[in-house]
Length: 270
Image 1 (cartoon, rainbow, N blue to C red):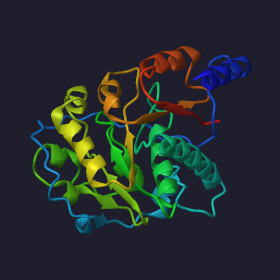
Image 2 (image 1 turned 180 degrees about the vertical axis):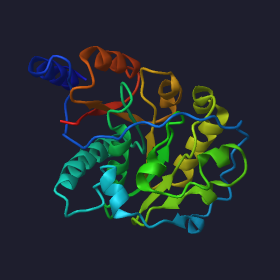
Image 3 (image 1 turned 45 degrees about the horizontal axis):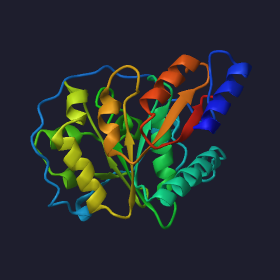
């Protein structure tokens, strides 16, 4: 935490309205409007069969448009994500952590793009598999950014219409599985703090013991969505953006994360 504070002060001197440590990464794209969704019955995980996971071939044009680059080792930018991956995994392995939340002080700073690229980078380690879960129930973006067909998603699982195995997607990248969300949920904070979501997180952790599970969460300062679910996740990575995240927003976000295992901060759009 002291290193984060020192980096914030250093960045503040260089640029009064922005601050943060870590790597320069790529920006997110504009947010979509929220749409309501239906109530949430209990979730059963006992019948999950990984062999049923859909395989979806990603389109290069869609990935490039949305700043997704970690799948391509010929892209020099992917090295930056690999460095972040190594830092994150070393800290998680030291503590026996396997679940990671990605959040930000405010929307539109690029947290979803960071989450996707980091998951891809982690999956490319031969001894590691990764699962990426879209828990931004106000503005879900992972499926859209990857170009995944969203005929079945977390929304249908929460409605009791499908089993977990029916909505998991392998984006044609070995050792990576995505759990997408199609529509915004009517009561996202209540949903994320519900027994359904608690059971889902517990089930994912226990059923996939060898995986790093990354949860893309909503931003911290515009709702209590992320705060409601963070106690169930091992550690947190916070994304801030050059020219967008102010010193006050970063300080307020750090206060919200004071009781979490904060791995560090990614300085985006630099």
